[in-house]
Image 1 (cartoon, rainbow, N blue to C red):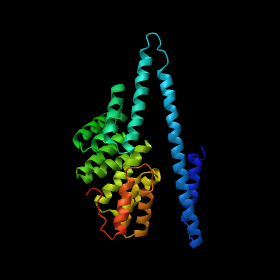
Image 2 (image 1 turned 30 degrees about the vertical axis):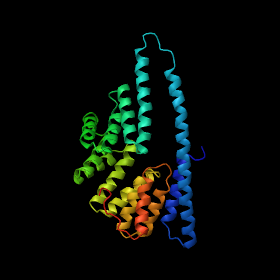
Image 3 (image 1 turned 120 degrees about the horizontal axis):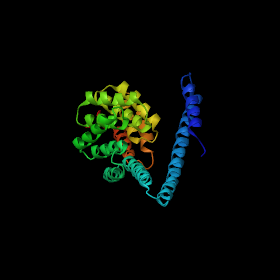
Image 4 (image 1 turned 60 degrees about the horizontal axis):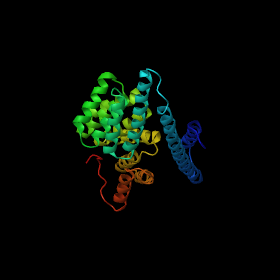
Length: 280
């Protein structure tokens, strides 16, 4: 792989240190070019890792094909866990692609292999939430939190569900707790994103911008994060930065949420009124 995470982090730190210094026009152009290059390098590394991850499926299939040991109850249990993890990863992919029904099916398959898997339960909650089945989603995630109160994905999902139900204060409490808990990077990513959306609902623009910047730093391909960051910047009066955020979100390949960023950019460019709330 051309870049590892440590190399990318060092370049990120280098650029951040330059941004903390006074810059003339030429230096600003250099920094801008460096940010674009870092983004492209990161995207390339993500694509390489995604391709490599697919090769691991062959290892899983090879393990499943091993002959069972005599009286191999333990082997069958391990097969169940491996089967569940495969469906969970495919469920993640479907969720990232906005295919909520496919994600639901895959995550239910994961739970047939491993009925107690809290990650599968939590992600199923996300899939149900996006199908406007909030009560069912909430029940799933609350059951996870009874067993693991600090489970980040479940806690973030409860926050997002509360927000969609209009219970913004409670949503902020759950999402803030998920962010403080840390741990799972994907839980942190979506907790920050939905916390930013919650702050937008409250018109707390500075807080929304801070949290949404954190989200797109953690997940540069989070097109919905760029869309809502642009919305927050726009209503703060930082129109050039808002357009840049929307351009970034609109250019993210294979994301079903790129259209949202593109739509906001086109609306702003046509002189239309950019809605303050992403939730309508």
